Length: 415
Image (cartoon, rainbow, N blue to C red; front, top):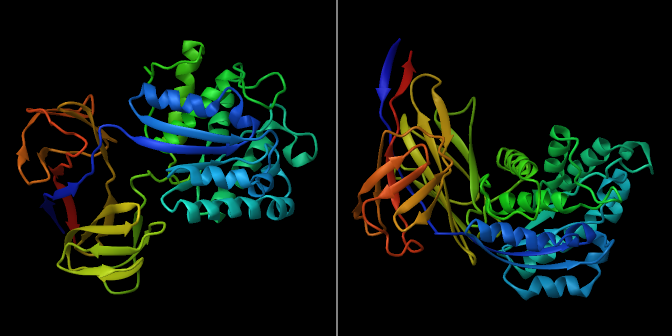
């Protein structure tokens, strides 16, 4: 057995914007309009340098069926080219018995979701996972405590999202985590059901992290009058709930609607992979396997010779072009693996760019602008996970750099 040292150089193209802009429609009821959840969400975004347009349709006590049968629901959906349409049912209905949910809730949630995808093909449907009541619901044993009711709501909203090609903002999950960690802090108003200001802030922060795909800093300047210690604990709890489980909540960034995975075909030809792409409403999907071979379609097979490859899939639709990439390594005996790299790089100053997440090891990093010209890097600040260029980028919104980085040596066992 001998060890072979491999030095891998990878080039990736990132689309960069100075800040994120979202148009979000909230369709819900009193859980949404209490303390103006949409407005608080917009305030958080503004404080963090992001832009949002929000609107809402919130009728007290409305169920999914009531929203589905209300013409104003569809007028609101038509009103703007939304990035997200948030759907919330009556606070108890998703926690009821499965047969009741299947007959009285799920069909109408799917109806509204289908309408959103038809009316606004570039919008994502996102479900507002609500929370269990402070002491549960005494109507039946399966929801007569907070934790029982909260668990049923969590399962139901994930099931509804899966049936609707949607995602979930896990407010109820963050609510439970916070209650378990800080039981002395109340998130409820006096009725033990609706949120107080602290509860609404937790919900708004969860929506911000879920929709913008960003971690909220502890020094967030917007605070709706919450005790600073409680305020910081909420932010930490929200970040952990959302950012650690993006795939669980089926969350996809509004500018990254294409994702794919590769599965090695065990028992088949060595180096053979099955690639599956998921891109809602994509009109075409194009694959580049980095070995002079290409393919088209949502599901493709490809066999590699020994080596390293950066596989790229590009999808196109009326909303734009989306790209996702995967690193494939084939070599040695039973040495088959793939690694994904997903980074967000955005301008935080005229010549400074943040990188999220900073979870990969890099020894050399170079940047090129869209013309192929090298852009000198003045400093790579690992502690601040940011880059600083030696000259200002005049138009950061149009700047789309190609970052070339060298991974540290990788030892491959050859038998």
